[in-house]
Amino acid sequence: MLLGGHGEVNPNSSWHSSRGAILSYLTGVAVLHVLLLSIPIFSVPIAWTLTNCIHNMASFLFLHLMKGTPWHLQDQGQARQLTAWEQIDYGRQWTSTRRLLTAVPVIMFLLACFYTKYQFNHFVVNATTLLFVLVPKLPQFHLVRLFGINKY
Amino acid sequence: MPKMWNVYESFQALLEAGPYHLAFEGFLLVWVIWLLVAAKSRPRPIKLTKKEEEQLLAEWTPEPLLSSAPDPEHPALNTRTVKGKLGHYVDLGSGPLLNLASHDYLRFSEHEGIETAALECLHQYGVGSCGPRGFYGTTEVHLALEQRLAEFFQCESCVLYSYGFSTMASAIPAYAKSGDVIFADEAVSFCIQRGLQASRSRIVYFRHNDSGHLQQLLEQQAIIDSKNPKKANATRRFLVVEGLYMNTGNICRLPELVELRHKYKLRLFIDESCAFGTLGPHGRGALDHFNIPMSEVDLIMGSLEYGGGSTGGFAAGTSFVVEHQRLNGLGYVFSASLPPLLAAAAKQMLEILEAEAKDLVPTLQHRASQLHSGLAVALPAKMCVSGSVISPIKHVAFKPSSGLTVKQQESALHRIVQEVEQRGVAVVVASLLRSKEVCPPPPSIRLVVNVRLTDAEITTAITAVADACAAVIEAEAL
Picture (cartoon, helix red, strand yellow):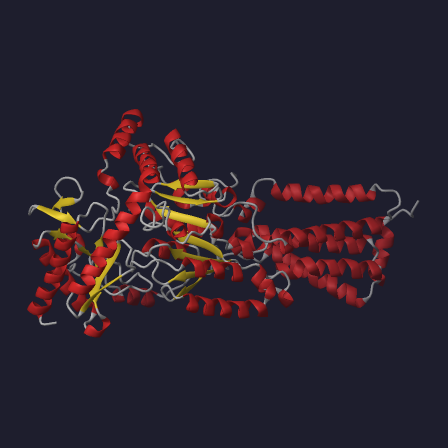
């Protein structure tokens, strides 16, 4: 797939579905987890919670806080008001890219719960960060800015 | 070393976990499975019954290719052909007529030095430039003209467009985007209106040349901004005006606008198309006329097609601002560049203008005021001449008190134009796409003054226009 090739109005809408994008993403998460596990002072539960937290924070920042595109678009600044998540597949809901990106943090949360032996403090941390990345992904929250945060 | 983890303990923990935890996880698990398996982005197909299909087919009537016969008076069906060159005199088939219709204020289209420069360039580069500026369309003539224009306007940088109309229509949307606010004079020309529309910004028109009204609107905007400072921070405010308005012939009140620009932190874009070569001691336009430094405006746009006697347009300002258009001015990026010979002609024109502006501009303004005062006296009571006295563009129109409809005025003005032609002078009714204009001015005959007019020619023109007006008003009992 040619990014920003002929006819692509907004490359930010489609690079997630280019070949190898999802694989690189999952590999990145796996590498992060292995790196954390390899640090001697971190126990397995802490490594899992940390992986989960770092992943969710990064994904919240890059998908739900950052707006606009790094490209010069001829859209008269329409994309300026959209977060990266909202630009995916030109705002179409329930596409495979969106479903995959939604499923990954949930599955990671379920795994983290299992590996942290269902401890309450780990659960609170993991569930809170999960909500940060799950709620803005729901179609009901498309273009919604809760409490006017990040509106302009 | 932390305790090693084992699977058995985790399963034990699962069995001992609180019900809230299990419920939450169970719900997420079911939801994720549903998400991956069942949820699909598929537009729901519209299912019609056989009966509904037949009903829809029966209801459909094809539209005719042409909705109605075009108006026989449509200008596209009644084109005029000029024989020979469009110069001081034009031949429309009935002998030479004094040309008061072309926007060739300084008669540069007939200048021999400019013609020679264009011909020399023609022999070197041929006619076309064979591509847009970003690819193969840039020749050294374009670069030299850009540099010359920047020097002429005392700006850091200048970009050259290949078509006057697309200059304004591209330069404005290169900066103003959706979410911004543009304040514009309601009499701005059609190309600016197109640019404003293409910007997708919120457009606020103020009454023509009424800085008081503009200030009122800016105050309103300031109140809106103070209620939502976060939004105001992300909103850019532009002010777009013309130096000399083509549609009305008035000079803009630049000193007041510059003050408002400072007070309300506006980005001021000025279109010097008609003012180029006609205002100011150096012929630079309205800024020169009011002796305002170039740093007081953010972008100077202009067309080389009127006073310049060539083709194309330019946008000048600081390099920081102007260079942005080389990737974002759509007319610059996607159009074939200006034919080099026309660029060479424009460059030669600048040399001449720079050398002779101190004579040309005052002569032109003197001729314009002669025509203005002559017409003001000679025109019948129902008509008037409008525009600034020194402006080379004059609009002869019916007074609002005449009580005529737009259609009546237009047909009377067309009759007047024919009558004027019989008296040896070529003039035109200002043609507008009325349905598309934001605030169309009343129908008028647009007279264009040029430097080569003699006293005798001005008297002829005044008599011709005044007599024709009187004749038509009498004949049609208006």
